[in-house]
Length: 244
Image (cartoon, rainbow, N blue to C red; front, side, top):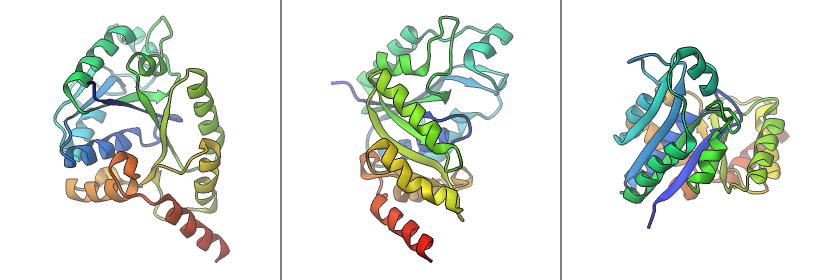
């Protein structure tokens, strides 16, 4: 029986996809599950520079972390491949490797580049195509901010269009001192997703030590991902602050 496959996508760049991927990875590893992580295409990273896969290894302790290709330019994988002359990612071939990993592991996490519909090759394939080919459930990382609700609604509409199952919405970088616009996202994101928020990872969690990061992941993710995030309590704290 194949392991569970989760695709971590986001409403855009810089929303905390890598942190959410690392958080789910370390909780699964703590629970004794065999975990593999794949970053099909990484952009904005050159040669031996530290990239997303290195951060995931450092924070989660999971060693089975791999990328298929990296590009130096911080743009879409399709455009970066065209400029660099490096090979593009063919989703059918990537899916074959990921499905093989799923046959060997309890959990495989795929971290996409940018958002759900970023193009990876001249055939205009996206990470949504890879999710379909690997039967992945989708975790949407969002950034608590102005504009988040519209971006999240568009991403969820795309999931529905592609008939991809939503595993949950996670705020990838929750500020220590949230302003009203961020706080209001808590309730509104649940309305848009029609389900409780699946987590909120504290801002700058990527700078924590491994034990501290594990604690942040545990308190920041819902039981669906092995954590103890209490969405109802999160909402209550927001309501209290709003009334205060």
